Every structure is written in C-alpha cells, then in structure tokens.
Length: 624
Image (spheres, rainbow, N blue to C red):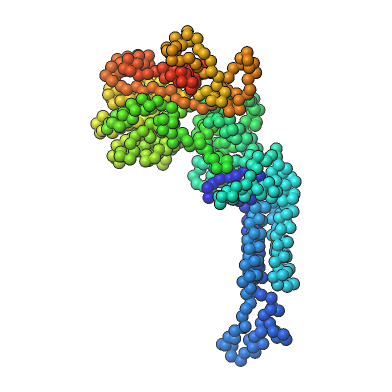
C-alpha cells in the first residue's frame, strides 16, 4: 500500500493486493518455505547412493573413524538445480494466489479464515507427502501443483457463485486484466470494460485517504470507510457525479431527508432526495476518508481525499458545516486541469490578455484577482499567475495548508497553518527570501494586506492576491472591509481582474434563429453584421419533438467559459474610492476609465454564438 490507495473489488482487479492481510498465511508460509527448501534442495537418496551401500555413501567411514578430527567428504551431487527452480516457481505462485485468496475473502466478506487453512494445509501436506514417499521430480512437481491449484479452483468456484457479475478468472476477466499490459508492448485486444457488476459489488473506484498524521492512520481510515454501511453508495454517488461532468456535490441534511445536488457547468441541479440514514452513511464515509469527525454535525470541517478510476485521478475536498435545518456538506471534485489553464484557455479575449500581461510585466504593483464563490477562482488565479514571467523573475506564494489550490510551475508555495505558524509569520519568511513576485491566493487578514501594500509600493515587488467577489468594484471594497487602511491600500492597488462563469451552448444541438430588430437594438448589435443568434434546442413547427441530446444531457449547454472585467486603476478611480467607497460609484468610475462591463463582454459571446441571451441574463442576475 505504498501509495495509500484502496481499490474496491471489481472485475478489473480480481488479483489486487491491497487489503489487510492476516498473519496466519505468512506464518504458515514460512513453515512451508523451510520444508520446501529442505525437500527441493536434496536429490533422491536412491540417486546418490551405489547399490548395496548406505546413504550417505561415506556413512560407515564417518561412524568408524578412529580420529574424530578428520572429516571425510561424500560424493556430492545432492542438490538438483532444475528441481529446485521448478518447485520454487510453484511455491512462489502458491504464495501469491494464497495471499490473493486472503485479501479477496476479506473484501467479499467470505470465510477467508477457513480458506487460508485449506490452502496452507493442502500445500504443507503435499510437501510432507512428497518427502515421505519419494522426492523425485516426476512425483513432487505434480503433487505440489495439485495442492496449489485444487484449493484455488475451489475458492474461485464458490466465490464467483456468490458474486455474480463480479467473477474472476473468467475469460472476460482475464482479457480485461491482460489487455492494458499487452497494450504497453503494442498488442491491442478488446478489454470488454463494460461487464455487468453485481448489485452488491462495490463500484470500480480507488480511494486515497488523506489528512491523517501518517500513512498508517490514513490506511486505518481507509479500512474503516470500507467497512462502513455507506461505502458502496458513496462510490456510486462519486461515479455518477463524474459521469455527469459535475465538479461539486452538495448534500443538504434535514431531520428526515438528504437532498443531493450536482454542480454541472457552474449551475446547481437537483439529483433527487435520499432518506436521512443513507445520507448519513455516505457522509460518514466521506468524512472518514478526509480524516474529519463524522460525529460532529455542527462545526465547520474541511479535508481532502483522492479517488481514481482506471488512469484518471481526482482530488476531492469535503467541506461541511451545521445549518439551521441540520448540516450541509459539499464535495468539490478536481481533476487537476484547472491549475494548468492559461489565460487563453479560460476564454479571455486577446486584447484583455495583452493588457493584463502588460500589467503583470511591471516591476511593482498590486493585482487583485476576484471571482464569486464556485466561480472558477482557482482556475483564474492559476491562469493569471501563469501570465507572469516566472523564468526571469523569482516568484513565491503563501497559502493555507487547508487549501493547496495554487500549483503553478516555478512558483513554490509556503504553507501556513502547520505547526502553529500563522499567515503573517509565513509571509515574513517569504519576504526575507527577496522574491520579485508574491502570490497570496486568499486575502483574509488586514495585517497581510497591509504588508503586501508596503511591499508593492516601497520594495518594488509585484503582488497578486485573491478575494471572492462578483465584480471588480466589489472586490476592492471587500478588501477594504477587512479594515485595511484606505490610504495604504488605494495607492498600492494597480488593477483588478474579475471573472464570472457562463455556460457555452452545446455544439451538437444548439439551434440557430433570426433575431428581431428590437432584440438587436436592445443588445446594441449592428443589424447588418449580426443576422443569426443561437439558443438551446427548442420544439418547432417542423420538429415538435426534437431528439434528446446525449452530449449535453438535454440541457442545451456543455462546458463553461469566462466573462471578464479588467479594471485598471487611475487617479479618477482612486479618488472615487477615497471619496465615495460604494460599489455603484466605483463601477461608474471604472466604466468612465474604459473598463468593459460583464454585460458588454457577454453580448460579444452571444453575437459569436458561444452562449445565449437567457444564459447571459441568468449569469448577470444570479444571486450568491
């Protein structure tokens, strides 16, 4: 268990060796190993002796020696290398298969203790029998093979009978297991991964418990979660969310029920209601994997665990807190691609990219990055930091150990929250390293912001900081709400980049239509250049029942892109903040300075057929 993963038993991993082992097989195996070595290392007595002579051939000389200091060697030739190699291979195969029987019996809740005794007893008996009767290779090898294969075959037969749909050592299972290995050497065969799984079989998913002090404790949490009643249901929930392209799951608990919602393409969608006991059992597994306290249903808790299906991995963050009706838990599912995004990848148009990169190229400054909750903050921050020249400039980041969101090449992260270190203390340590760029993904402390402002104005450093806000003007005021001295912050800040996510129309089923002149006038689009707009598929007179689109699951949207504001502060904007620090006043000053609004950016996407008018309205009017 070097990587701390546990694989739920599936047809794709019938021989997985990752569960807890009982010591009986290994203790008995040691006895068998010793007996096997004695047996297979010495040739048949008949082969070593001459007719009419005792064995060893020099036995009479040894017993009749007058001088006991002498030692008379025998004729030699007592070891058979071929027999040694063959029997040793059989022994290794028996050890491997018996170990699998033990671990598989634990997973499938079979009577693994009995099968351990059968497997070990049969092999030990075969070794002793071969020794007592005749140790020739013609008898020893078949006897060992029967003692190995017969118990294994019997176990597989009864195991497959009790686990229909999750059989092992069947032609389909063998094909599925060897297909990836053959593919590595260029041999491709169909692996048939879509076999039916029995109703009670755990989902084919790996888990990696995290958050404990060491791997031993993480492994203990892993096994505890595995034996919990909600283990299978948790795997089904995670796999369903992944299949639906969700990047978050919300579990809302009331006294009698658990409401499940998925966040798909930035929108929360209902996914049914479960009874409270089943919802509680799922949450117990999630908290156990993340090293949280399942019994604590009131305090705010946060932790992470990993999952893997085939070669794809995800990092899951569990956040839970008590509510008036019970508890709310959110599981964020991250495949890691967001941290590798560039400005062009997230949908920022070229002009904004050029303007932002020019700001990031300055020797000093304070760039504020903002997005609403669940609005792609991690992706935006990673893309902005990636826009910094990290090869010619030395960069460093300060982040909470509970988040670990920032993963940008050549930007080492110093975490706070470990061993009692506070954020200001860790920031001081980073400053002493004299970096050219300092990144703080979450601005939540006035002292930290004040220190960063000082570094931006007096030490010629570029600062990149993040804060949650729905628009650029609001981001500025949220920082001031931390009680940061206004006269210190306003001169230091140079720009704010804000993002709001908007769904993209499904390219498979989006429907073209001709907009009315009034519609184009409201959108301020030229009628001579924009003749067609797009929307989700809708019934028409020609097609009253349009075909269901599997690509977008009938929603009409697939994937998201960003709407961006880039507010570059000038004297007028700074004066407005100092004189009238309200969102409306700052927004108007920003527009007068040339900032394009989220609405204007969205209308451009509507005109390009990327999104629709209803979706733009939803994004602009959506409440937190």
